[in-house]
Image 1 (cartoon, rainbow, N blue to C red):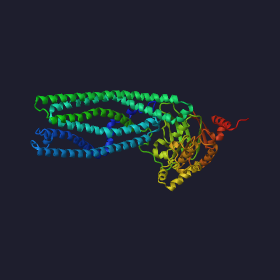
Image 2 (cartoon, one colour):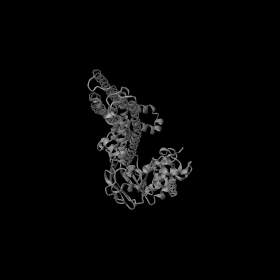
Image 3 (tube, helix red, strand yellow):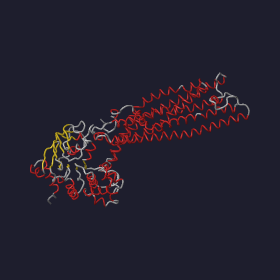
Image 4 (cartoon, one colour):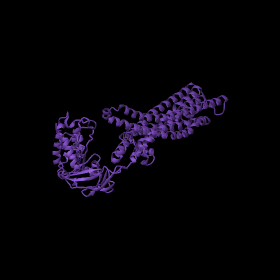
Length: 630
């Protein structure tokens, strides 16, 4: 169950396995390029270790003359015999220059290869993960969208997926950096002085343990941060979407305080995490500083005392050049632990969402009808949203194919809920809904919804053209419209004419190619409703539902739409929910609901004669339409 803010605090209930292991599973498809990228990254890091060795060798053998042959001689890259004379020293220097040039060339090539291969792979994984998450999200049942706010879902699709991409893109390379740099430096330092190498490397396990402890400290903080971000996003989205309401009621101060409260929560959580992070990194710097002075003192004392195995001047310089290289990745362990926890928190939300299964699905062996006549039966239907009281109670209704049924009743009577059980936006708690005698739960879900069209009171239009929004009602028409197929455009125009939308569309600046804006903001409410009706008709459904579909049009347009709909629903089963009872007076049957139960049923004339609830509503509306006497 989601919290009151519509977040994803319940995500652990549907998370399957470790979230970071699930993330790595997405990388499996790109293992060849990732393997090459990892090898190239190791080569880059090893190549970076060569210049300090060249400097140490130049100091000991080129500048100071005969000395210990050094590591390069041990591996066969330089002669081991003492270097005597100017010509020999110049030749050695030239050999060092050549090795250095090759090391920098190798570093440049492998650095490009590693970054390109690893970063492009991270982008591909991000793309796949976002596509899969969005596709899974849109297939979840309507109860999920009731319980979760849009802002929280957007946070998962954008912020969380982007953070995972950034983790793969940056921190994965940092792990390679730590392993290659620390491992390579350890080998080299141990070759020159095991005692000083032990001092230099002693903090490594300490930092590893401290990082583990750091994860324990920071984990609750980052979970709280993610939750506070989701709540802040939800509040901002609600306020921006409700700008007109805020303005009309002059609630600027009230909404500012609500946003400020959410911002303060986010600030407090972030500052708390920041305090822990800064303390951790300060401790790491102090530890590496202690190592630096110890190496300086012990190594210098050995050289002064002439102890066995004391470092040469070049080797001493090599130690401090490497210590600088060693400290950075050591400190990065803590930062990577910080980034890991952030990524883990995001991965929990993403893969928790992917683990959430829809509550309404097709059965294992679904029914695929060859044709749907449109005979509809509600058998003792009871339904409620979640744990709330039932919205419908023991509703039974039989509608023959091709009939038009008007649904009337006060707000909250259950009219809209009843018709939304037809396409299985929700499943009944008890009873059954049947189409052509088959329980809708036995149908293939896609096949069922292809035969049912719904036009709501506040229709949603997508950002795009008029033609695209109408063609959206049919897969084939939409694909053909995008391909600029003339036959598809003819179908769109025919549906628009039937919905009494053609005239106003042709008056738009670009006709059917006019952009409607976000949510159809460039059109009036009545124009949006007429386009929604056209969108429903283009699919030629067997069952069509109009949920207050003419509430935002004027009386004249309503009459024109009604005349067209009378023709269009002639061979279809139609459910018409109407606040204005004049819309449904000619229906084959009118059903009146109250408190989730059918209280009246019959023709317009029969219900007027019964002088019940319907007659009272009809007379009240008739009186409202009649001008008052002067």
